[in-house]
Image: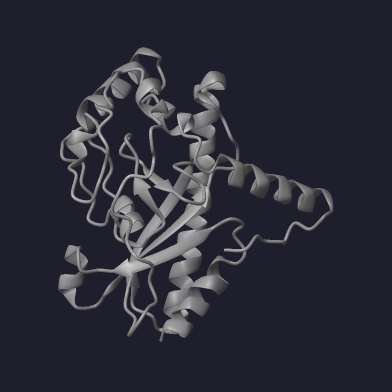
Length: 250
């Protein structure tokens, strides 16, 4: 069953450059209770440009977010179609939108799946820091059933070392600077509610019609930048050579 599921996921994602996936047992989630699913899946893709906090432009950040969100919808649709065709029980749970009402919990957290599937850790900013791309990612989380899947060991400790760039980058001073380890409550790392409130107020003040993107904690992180730059350079060369259908390893 492992080889079948892996082949289905790999084939479905092969046309999406830079997209990677990992999975973990579903023991931690309410979705296990249905009996239909026993694994959680995280699919993640890097940003298509590197922007720093020193060259931050709100419209560019918002545009990138829209592009990557649209791209991940295509990824999700491809996975759902492939899983259905292969007879794999598969579900992408609905994502709860931030409605200014704590505790902002989703039924299937991409961050929790990420650390449990071994793709990264939780940074001081409370963002998932992936080994491959750092926090500059868009994600899709899903649940599925398989008789057996090979999985990586979970990540249980912060691996930021002495770096605190995200703490210094927060314009609202809402990142506490504490170090995450398995079981650390989000509230010890970040005042998430006030982050949401402050960005909403700033967005209204600027007439954006939405929350201010901010993303300074994300953009300050150096992890994964080199990998994204190499991937983007490879894709640019392929486009220049007319190889628009080429894809990177996933």
